[in-house]
Amino acid sequence: MAKKITRARKPLDNEEDRFISFLNRVIEFSKSHLKVLGLGLTLIILAAAGWGIFYKINQQRAIKAAEMLQKVRPALSQPEAAAKNLEALQQLISNYPKTGAALQARLFRAQLLYQEKKYAAAAAIYESLRGQDAGLDVLLIESLSFCYEAQQQFQPAAEVLEPLVKDTQLPYRGELLRRQALLYEQAGDKVRALNCYRRLLRLTSGAAFAPLIKEKIHLLEQKQG
Image (cartoon, rainbow, N blue to C red; front, side, top):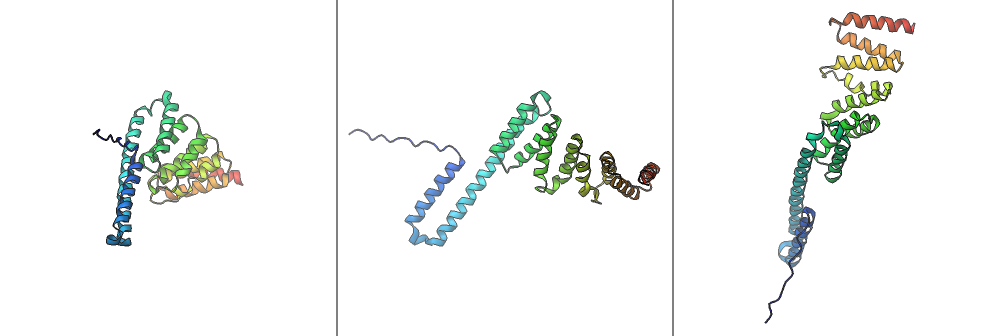
């Protein structure tokens, strides 16, 4: 008698397929043992299985994203490879969204776009990331300010710094106040520039450069008068 030939099953392509296959097996098992298990226990099994598989998938995705980023990083300092790097970073972001590597890739893309003088595109990335991670807010705000300044948008470049100059815990708050004052001057907003210099003087009244700030305040007051 001829031996029955069975076709080998095609291997599943990715983690999501394995997850679906596993869930199907759990569901079939639950159907055939429903009287023994009870509906509540079945749901617990499904929930536990789903959480475990999803956790594993996310872990694997994070590892793959980090590996992909590691391949791109050495070339980021090469200006001639900027276009290629921007494309590779975007592919990482598209393939592995919501991973730590994707967040880093977005920051790298913004930096490359700034270096390529595509300031509006860089600013859009920095703006989209604000509020997602409190630890990044200082970097994002300062970067946004530089993007606006590069486009000669001096008013928004100064205004966006306000949350930082109000932060009394920031060690270089005085330097940010000085920069904000200069930006308001460039924008032609002498009232706000004067206010910044006065705040700066209160903050650094004992510093060696305090007389220079006083002179600046005096000149602006004369122009206002």
